[in-house]
Amino acid sequence: MAEAQSTRPGSTNTNRQKVLRKVPWIDGGMAGQSVYVLQCQRSGCGHEYGEEGIRVHQRRCPKCDGGAPGLPVPEPVPTLFG
Image 1: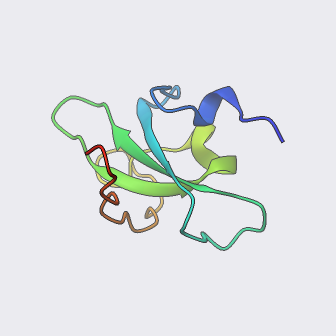
Image 2: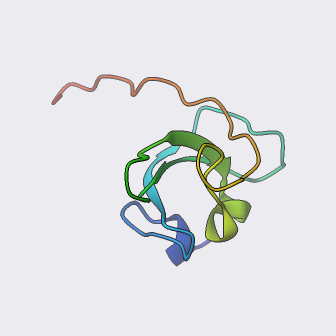
């Protein structure tokens, strides 16, 4: 299945939520969906949270814009190159 434009790292939805990275080892509960880390781009916020790919395009920040609570965000796994 092809990756949607809305889930590519660096893309920002209309509610100013930016995709930072895909977190493939977390199961959000919805079959066939990967979890993505989003970061709010609204002034003074920067909140990071997880969400399933199917909802990324319409997501609102749970901290400053009345969005539903996000999924937990794990620490990035260190890789050989940093």
